Length: 214
Image (cartoon, rainbow, N blue to C red; front, side):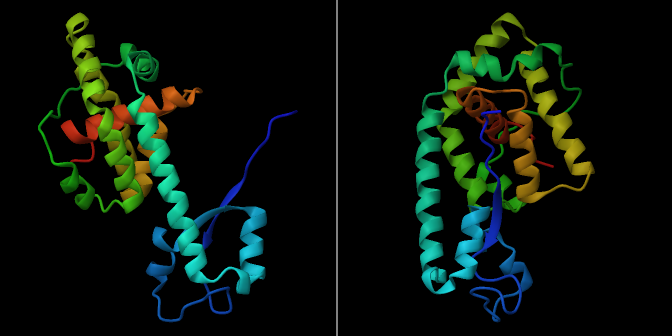
């Protein structure tokens, strides 16, 4: 008791089916279900924007979505800027029990190339861009750990690659795969600072090794 649970829903800005609020017959089904036409709301506000359509026209919802995403991006940038060694140590504590990678490489692949290759949306692109702000700190941390444990970089990479290949084999791709990898990077972490550090490590590997390369 006493814990608040917030339930959200992905609402369509322009309606999903004929007769739905703000339905646009000129859109394809793919465009309707695209992340650009979705806005995340609580159940109460999802009902309100659909029942009181006159008060929530398409341009108003698009502006609301854009303003919220700007606030989220700013918050992410500030959070990634604060990532430090203690948080990184907490985020990758599982690496100590991970076997080194048997294959793969730390070849430099341009993030933009990976984003296009994996058909990631602007939402994922913004997370990656924000996460890259902490790449120097993450790189310094990995280098420092490698001085004490030469296999640390390979074990770190192995854990993410194992999860990545398993998710790909299960048929996940694009934003869904990226979100699952973000969840993997944050698993078992409670403090938001540690969760942010986990994402920072994923983005570091996104840039410098073959996670999201294949």
